[in-house]
Length: 335
Image (cartoon, one colour):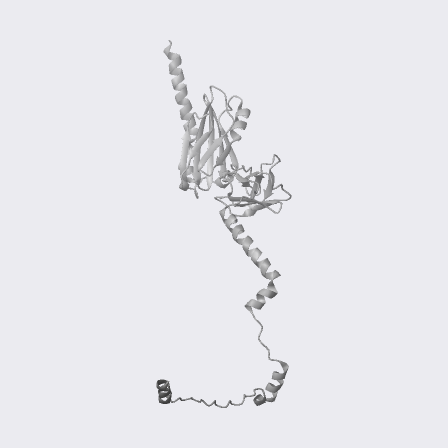
């Protein structure tokens, strides 16, 4: 007698699995990509309405899927808290009516998180949620373009500087799988000044006027697509923080060397300017000029009158006095 309830539970569970598999055949089959569906459409199939049918259908229709830069696909929906209700999930990714990825999970009450390969990220996502309760079931099929699920990475190549009382921030476009059109991107810029972030559309730079150069600014930025380019876009993560510190003039070795060499050169230049006339006379002496009378004779070509030669001196006669040495010798002896 006690085994009967156990067998009833086993048969009931098996029936639920079969019903879920039967109702989910379309989504788990690769041929599901062959069906013609409009993007963003919802399809509802049901046998008999389950308990709280309207409330449950509303929850499984409120599905949010996001594809992150790390190729991570997250799909979530409001929780269905009923013990006798089973939720099954079927996901197919289609590329030109051909399935490149399939996923199925029975009794998956919470959100689904999958890591996709690059070749599995294609055009269309088909998500089917099946709700079964005893012999009744309800299915909702979501069809959406993968481009509508994209969450952008934060902008790159961020630079910030303060100059002439203005803070200028520059960045590069975030990477997108679908578009490089700058008008499709919206930015939120936070400069760490306890004010609301700046909202910017289609820009790649921003200048804040009249900033205090003595303050420290912490700049970060995030991005998302414009609503004209994507329905219900989601903000990216914040970029890394760029810190702009106050400008402090510090003496370093090159500055000290420049000052040491510059001051003597400046003093030398001042001395040269003050004593310019004296220095110029030493470096560039004046060319001698002859007196006016010489200039007159030079112009007349009468150079013979310029110089008077002195008369030649008469040669002096040399007189040699000769004494008779013998006579003097005899006089000496006689004495």
